[in-house]
Length: 360
Image (cartoon, rainbow, N blue to C red; front, side, top):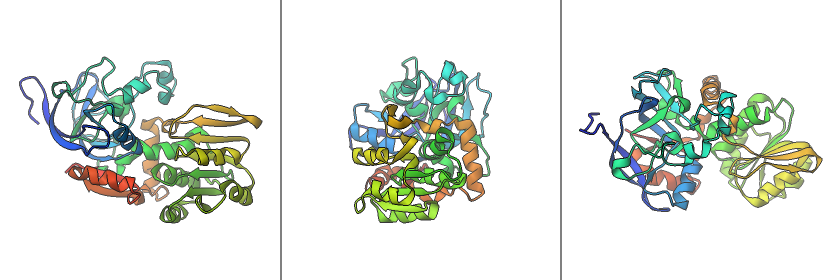
């Protein structure tokens, strides 16, 4: 890409222009990378539930969403050492790298986490799209675009032999579900787990639970086809919450639960999960909330990104996928970038579990 006289490069991006309104693919201009930044040509981007939630709510437009990007490094700033032009990368959430949480290996607790991932600007208040008055930097990437500016903190280098369009969703939803099981809960063989909601995050948790040997693994949903897939991917039992009293059914299966994960943000299901916890049991709520103490030393935990360090955990998930143990590719349906609105509609209607946009 050639730069204009001001150092900007021409890109295409799907711009959100209003709450729930169709996104429009527009021509924008993006800054050259600063010293600590990396310019990545996006090959593919997953569509995450968080993208859709923000698109439906509005209030940030005009803006470029997307935070499950994968692509090829085109240019690096002078301070960047982790990657070079031509490297293939998966993008994940952003962290500052300077606060105590980052220095102690807990980047999901970064003191600037909210501003870096949901502030739609750099920490200094600037935007790579200033000339167009469009907001970007969502999760440090805004991957509904042909090119993004990222940093070493949210880039994971991967083998050039691997398909970037398949790897793209690892940066958020899959990492969150699997990480909650493997990192946050550290579930051990023989411990019981129920997963409420069998979309991308829930199915990732189920696959991870099978890998670590959890038993039983219970999947709860209202879509028979999702429950059937959950069976294939690792559950020992499934429950249709429209037809069954969930706590009673769990009681018959295993008594009380060691662990539960809610991906639905449905108050009734969260209450069902809470009532099914054993003493010392843990419930993860992945759609927002705060940590809470319950009687009998039970806890509700609001977990972010599965407490994952992307540069460590994403390569682990890739290894498990290549070994056939984490077949997340079964969740994916591909769409041309220009069909982003159809992809979102298909996810909303339950026709697609994980939509992935191909930029070309």
